[in-house]
Length: 315
Image (cartoon, rainbow, N blue to C red; front, side):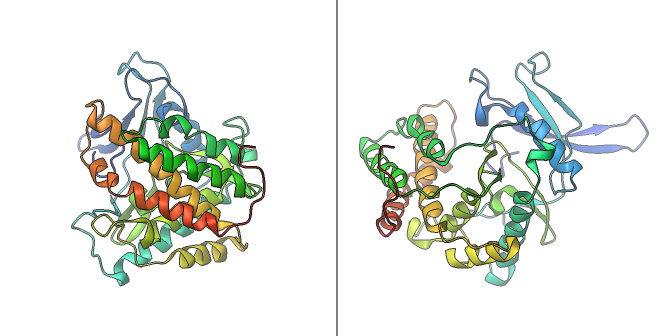
C-alpha cells in the first residue's frame, strides 16, 4: 500500500470461515535490520491505537500484534482496513477534486480530528506508554538525522536553524498526545468524510502544538518551491485559528512550532534522500523533497529571526 509512502505496509483480505465473509486488514512491519526504537518500533503503536480506538477516536482497530519476529522476521501490527483514501497533499489521488471548495473541508476535518486526539486523556489511558519529551529534546533528536544529509550545505543551514530554535523556544506546554505527521495525507477520506487518522509511527507525548505547527508549515507557500507545493487552500493563520477554536485556547507561540516543523521536515528529507540514493530505501518522491530543503530551512530561519531570545542557544 504505497499511497501514503508509509514503509512496509500491506493490505490483504481475511476470508472465512463463514461463506462470503471477507475482512479487510492492513499489515505493518518493522523495517528489517534496524534497531527497534521510536518510529522503527512498529509494535509500540499497538497499545496506542487500541487505547484510542477504545476511546471512540477515529483510528483502526488492532486485532493482532506481536513484538516477536517469529511470524514475519520482524515485529508487526495488523489493523482493520478503513474505508477511503489518503489525500497525499503533494500529489493527490485523481479521485479527489482540487478546488478550494473541495479541499478546504479535508483540512478542516483533519484539524478537528487533531483537536480530538489532543484532548485524549493519555495520563489515564496510556500512563506507561511513553514519558513526555521536553521541547529541547525534540529539537536535539534530529541531530543525527540531519547529519545523514548528502549535502554539507544542508547540514550547515540546518544546524543554524537548530541553534535559533533552541535560543527562542517556548516552555513546551500544553502537553498531550502528538501524532507527529498530522495532515490530510495521513487521514482517510471516503466520500469527502474523514474515516480515520493513520500512520502513527512518529507519535509521542509532548507539546501538542507540534502537530499544529506542522500543518501551518504545509500551508505556508514560502516554505515550498513552485513545482512541489502542498495542495492547501488554507493559510497558516487560518490553520492556527481553526485549531484555537476547536481547542478553546490561544497559541501565541505557534510561529515557533511552524519554524520547528520546517527544520524537522528538512532533516527528515535529508535522511530519506540519503536512503533513496544509497539504494537502501528507494523512493523517487524524496528527489522532489530535495528541492524543498533550502526553502524550508530559509523560511524557518526567517520566522525565528522575528522571535525574541528566551534561552541561551546551546542550553
